[in-house]
View 1 (cartoon, rainbow, N blue to C red):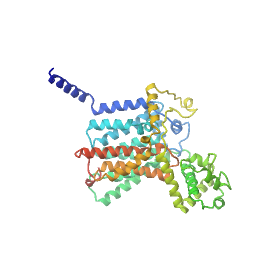
View 2 (cartoon, rainbow, N blue to C red):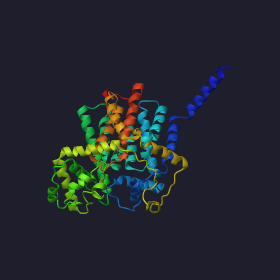
View 3 (spheres, rainbow, N blue to C red):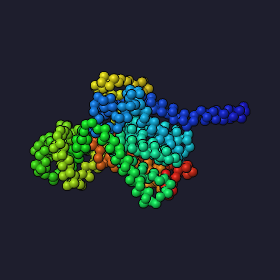
Length: 455
């Protein structure tokens, strides 16, 4: 049997497949497969509430950044429900990641890897839920892609995505900082002092603009810090600082809505756990405070926080580190609900049921949820290791530093333990590692080195 015809046929098939499966086709097929898992978009209690806000059923408030409900309002007018929000967060993430990867590998390879990252269990179970965390991840990835562009208009688009990421997620100010600082003036045409000084001013301006945009839209204040993070910190500091006289604290702040006057120390010793969230601190059976309802009560809680945190910085540090370690070790909850509130199906007129393949895929991710491969601890450690290997590799350095900054922000302010709070750090560890080793395998991949200025 002559092998030459077989070889020629194989070559023709390979060429035909190469022409058919372009990078765009691969991206589109991968995105469609993502929709098989996530369509029309899962919603938690946060999501359903924000959809109701977007429709005017509830007033815009500061418990969630109003920008997300504002965007949803107009997408919901086109196609009712969560689908277009799912499209927005997944497409910005996928296309943004693809563009980032084209700086270190071929377009086809970048498309394949971008799809694999989108579909990875560590990522897909968050990106398929309509959360501000998922929106932030999509916008941040698109921002990095835009700021890597040679064209000014795309860099402007990149800064717009920085604004949007901060506007939909308050703590996005942390991961956006290294992105803006390290990718401004990417060719290093300015003196380093002027370059980084201007970049800092730009970051501050974008952050304040995002906060101001939300403030303008707020119709009702829920005082998220006073009712969320502050009580959690008070709880934790009192636990790690047993020498604090809680009776004296009560006398100094009589307007604070103490849940168990005269028994604060007992409540703290019995009820504190690192994975307690704001509900445990202000509403649960072991609450230390009641939900504040007046300005005097809110001011008193803020006063208590300043008193115990600034008076016991080591205890505050121990508390925040304890929460962060718990966050890194926590198991993963895979969301499979299209709504999470009893009123939502009728009130929002949104009903959906999973397909058989969708249910099968979700069940697989659920089985992996308890495995170490999905927990954040490994990815935080990998972030630190990869950063040590990032010499003269700016793109990997920017991505990993963004993930590290995000983790630092979570450690300092997160009012609860939830995988989605640390999701961006996990994504950055994966993407940063891919960029790092792709650059080592293909030194001519086109990435600008750190010595050449911000890429």
